[in-house]
Length: 392
Image (cartoon, rainbow, N blue to C red; front, top):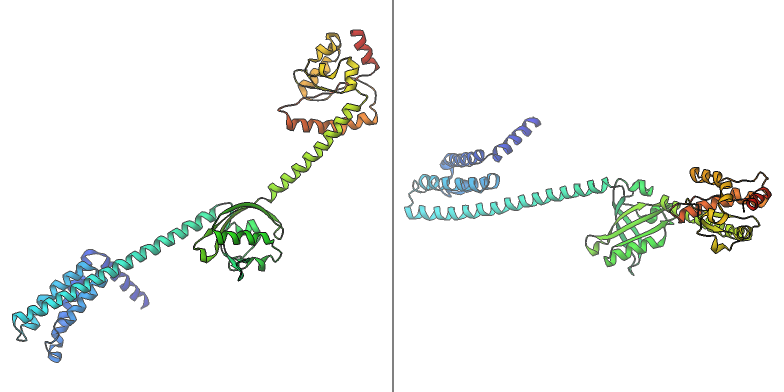
C-alpha cells in the first residue's frame, strides 16, 4: 500500500512537471469544483458562487504555476457568473461586479503564489549551490597532502586565548597530527601540555584577522609544523582555518646537516693546523695538476715560498725529470680518483691518523665548497729525495 501511495505521488509530481499536464490539472480542478458546487446547490443555494472556484484557482497556482492559475481563473468567471449568479435572479451589473471582485482576488492570489514559488525555487537553488560548494570544499581539502582544520578559539573575559575547539578536519589531519576523532574536542583536552604559543598565535589571528605563516615545534605531539592560518567567517565567530604540514623529518635532516657541518669545520681547523705544523710535506692539486695548497714542510722541500707554488703546475715546480718519476701515480689518481703514495715505509701514528681520518673529512668538506675537487697527496722518503736530487 505504501508503495502504491509513493507511485501515485511520484506520478503526480511527474504530471505537474509536464506543461500539458499542468494545464490539464487546472481544467480538471475547475471542472471538479464546478460539479461540486452544482451538487451542493440544493443544500446551500446559489450564494457565494465563486468560493469553491477561488479555491481551484489558488490550488492550481500553488501546485501548477501562474499560467495554469490564470487559465483556471478565466474558466471560473463565466461558469460561476452565468450558472449561479444569473440563475439566482441577479442583474448583469451585479454579476459583472462579483466577477470583477473574483478576478481581482484571483489575480492577487496568483501573483502571491507566483512570488512564493519563485522564492522557494531561489531558496532551493541557493541551498543546492551551498551544498555543492561544501562538497567541493571538502573534496578539495580531502585531496591535498597537507593537514587542514577549522578551530574555534576560546577566550577568557580579558580576551586572552585559553584553548581552541576543532570544528572540522580533513582526512589527512589524523596522519599529520596523530589525533583521532578531533571534531568537537578541545586541544587542552587532547594534549594538556600543548605549548602556550599555539593558543596565542591563533588567538591573535581570530581577533585581528591578520593571516600568519610560521614554523613551530609541538613538543606535546612530538612534531614540527609549517603552518598557514587565517580567520574564517565573521569576527565574532572567532574561527581560524589552519593549513599545516608535518616537517619533522626535514627539520631532523637540517639538524643533522648542521651537526655534520660543525664537525667538518672543527676537523678542517684541525687539519689546517696539522698541515701548517706537520714535518711531512703535504700538497693539494686540481685535475689540471696545479697546486691548490702546500704546507711549509713541502715549501722547504722544494725550496720555494708557498706563494710561488700555489697556482703553478707540478711540472714547473718539480722539473720535468722529477715529475716523470711521479707522473704514473698522479695520472692514476686523476683517472680513478684514488690516493696513491710512493713510499714503502709504514706511516707513523700521525701520518696514519691523517690518512684515515682527516684527509677523507677534508676532501668531503672541500667538495661541499668547490664545484669539484680531485686531490692527492705527495709523500717522499730518502729514495724519492735522492731521485729528485738526481733529476735536478
